[in-house]
Length: 109
Image 1 (cartoon, rainbow, N blue to C red):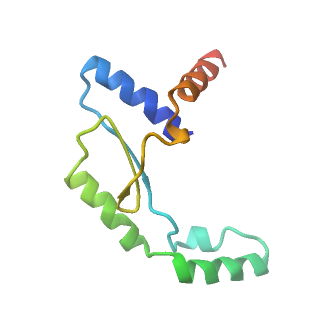
Image 2 (cartoon, rainbow, N blue to C red):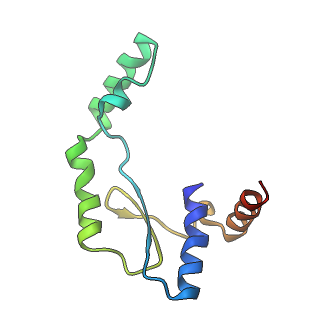
Protein backbone atom coordinates (compact mmCIF):
# COMPACT_ATOMS: atom_id res chain seq x y z
CA UNK A 1 0.00 0.00 0.00
CA UNK A 2 2.89 2.38 0.68
CA UNK A 3 4.00 1.90 -2.92
CA UNK A 4 0.63 3.12 -4.18
CA UNK A 5 0.54 6.03 -1.75
CA UNK A 6 3.97 7.07 -2.99
CA UNK A 7 2.83 7.10 -6.62
CA UNK A 8 0.17 9.78 -6.13
CA UNK A 9 2.19 11.71 -3.57
CA UNK A 10 5.08 11.99 -6.02
CA UNK A 11 2.74 12.90 -8.88
CA UNK A 12 1.20 15.71 -6.85
CA UNK A 13 4.64 16.97 -5.82
CA UNK A 14 5.70 17.16 -9.47
CA UNK A 15 2.60 19.18 -10.38
CA UNK A 16 3.07 21.66 -7.54
CA UNK A 17 6.84 21.94 -7.72
CA UNK A 18 7.15 20.53 -4.21
CA UNK A 19 10.52 19.77 -2.72
CA UNK A 20 9.46 16.72 -0.71
CA UNK A 21 10.61 13.39 -2.11
CA UNK A 22 8.95 10.07 -1.27
CA UNK A 23 11.54 7.36 -0.54
CA UNK A 24 10.48 3.80 0.18
CA UNK A 25 13.04 1.68 1.98
CA UNK A 26 12.94 -2.03 2.79
CA UNK A 27 15.85 -3.15 4.99
CA UNK A 28 14.84 -6.81 4.45
CA UNK A 29 15.28 -8.97 7.56
CA UNK A 30 16.49 -7.05 10.62
CA UNK A 31 17.51 -8.89 13.77
CA UNK A 32 15.61 -6.91 16.37
CA UNK A 33 14.04 -8.07 19.62
CA UNK A 34 10.61 -7.22 18.23
CA UNK A 35 11.12 -9.42 15.18
CA UNK A 36 12.62 -12.26 17.15
CA UNK A 37 9.96 -12.22 19.88
CA UNK A 38 6.87 -11.57 17.76
CA UNK A 39 5.65 -15.16 17.96
CA UNK A 40 3.84 -16.82 20.87
CA UNK A 41 4.80 -20.34 19.85
CA UNK A 42 8.21 -21.46 21.19
CA UNK A 43 8.75 -23.41 17.97
CA UNK A 44 8.07 -20.34 15.82
CA UNK A 45 10.39 -18.25 18.01
CA UNK A 46 13.13 -20.83 17.52
CA UNK A 47 12.52 -20.93 13.77
CA UNK A 48 12.53 -17.11 13.55
CA UNK A 49 15.82 -16.93 15.45
CA UNK A 50 17.36 -19.50 13.10
CA UNK A 51 16.18 -17.71 9.96
CA UNK A 52 17.22 -14.27 11.19
CA UNK A 53 20.62 -15.66 12.20
CA UNK A 54 21.12 -16.73 8.58
CA UNK A 55 19.57 -13.89 6.55
CA UNK A 56 19.05 -11.09 9.06
CA UNK A 57 21.22 -8.06 9.60
CA UNK A 58 21.78 -6.07 12.77
CA UNK A 59 19.88 -2.85 13.38
CA UNK A 60 23.13 -0.94 12.85
CA UNK A 61 23.64 -2.60 9.45
CA UNK A 62 20.04 -1.89 8.45
CA UNK A 63 20.39 1.80 9.33
CA UNK A 64 23.49 2.42 7.20
CA UNK A 65 21.63 2.60 3.84
CA UNK A 66 19.03 4.90 5.39
CA UNK A 67 21.64 7.37 6.62
CA UNK A 68 23.24 7.24 3.17
CA UNK A 69 19.88 8.17 1.61
CA UNK A 70 19.45 11.02 4.08
CA UNK A 71 22.93 12.36 3.29
CA UNK A 72 22.50 11.74 -0.47
CA UNK A 73 18.77 12.03 -1.18
CA UNK A 74 17.43 10.79 -4.51
CA UNK A 75 16.52 13.55 -6.94
CA UNK A 76 13.34 11.89 -8.18
CA UNK A 77 9.92 12.52 -6.65
CA UNK A 78 9.54 8.79 -5.90
CA UNK A 79 12.22 6.18 -5.32
CA UNK A 80 12.32 2.80 -3.66
CA UNK A 81 15.12 0.61 -2.36
CA UNK A 82 15.57 -2.88 -0.97
CA UNK A 83 18.70 -2.54 1.09
CA UNK A 84 20.92 -0.52 -1.27
CA UNK A 85 19.38 -1.78 -4.52
CA UNK A 86 16.96 0.50 -6.37
CA UNK A 87 13.53 -0.98 -7.02
CA UNK A 88 12.01 -0.87 -10.51
CA UNK A 89 9.12 1.62 -10.30
CA UNK A 90 7.41 0.02 -13.31
CA UNK A 91 6.52 -2.98 -11.15
CA UNK A 92 2.84 -3.74 -10.62
CA UNK A 93 3.00 -2.50 -7.02
CA UNK A 94 3.47 1.05 -8.38
CA UNK A 95 0.48 0.91 -10.77
CA UNK A 96 -1.06 4.37 -11.14
CA UNK A 97 -4.57 3.03 -11.73
CA UNK A 98 -4.44 1.10 -8.47
CA UNK A 99 -3.04 4.17 -6.72
CA UNK A 100 -5.98 6.27 -7.95
CA UNK A 101 -8.43 3.57 -6.84
CA UNK A 102 -6.86 3.46 -3.36
CA UNK A 103 -7.05 7.25 -3.16
CA UNK A 104 -10.73 7.22 -4.19
CA UNK A 105 -11.59 4.52 -1.64
CA UNK A 106 -9.73 6.35 1.10
CA UNK A 107 -11.48 9.64 0.36
CA UNK A 108 -14.91 8.00 0.31
CA UNK A 109 -14.55 6.54 3.81
